[in-house]
Length: 270
Image (tube, rainbow, N blue to C red; front, side):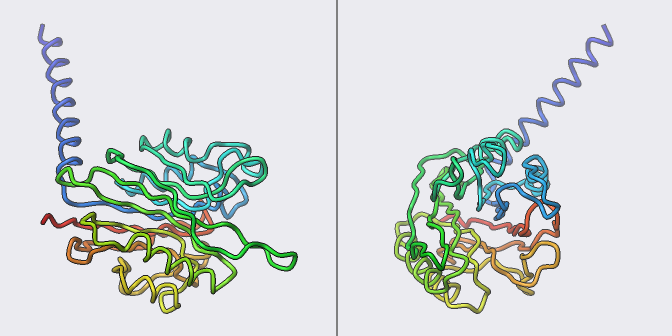
């Protein structure tokens, strides 16, 4: 009898703990945000390892994750559906925003989230098409609206700007402002690999409409082994709706050729 009571008590304690964790996650005004260019699953050791990436993500306990360079069914990465696999390994919902066909599969951006999803949209961004002398890639943004704190909509965007044409990055920044810097009452978080340093023109354009959730040192994010450049970011708007609690770059040199960017933002209720 005593043993049975102890088992019942233990189960009850675990249930209470679980219920408390769920309640806290749903009711808090604090959002844990991660931005990560995962280099199509390939680490700096040349190995494709989605499980390793999932462990990096899980360590930060994020509510929302913006991913770039995600392969789905691509030959080079073993035909793995990387977006779905990361969802399975982290226990988060996923939405994938392809930007191009590649080696028999798709390549693009994705969002992982613990928050209920209300809407999803894929927005193409301007880019210069490839020529015999210059290879470029189509660009886009995936926009996921979730039910955020206070049961109110929250917009979250993952994007990736062109890597080798400065004029494309300028056009993409202007397009982001045109499409998403709107005063519709929905607080918005923008995260991605902008392929631009903090003082570059695309970032200056974004800062006309967004606030940069960046650490004071503007810690570099790429290349991950010995970072020299800050090119990965988390932005938010409007500034009056958010308070930045923390911002840092995660010292992870192996899982990808970029280091992930992490921020804790407090959403202020009206």
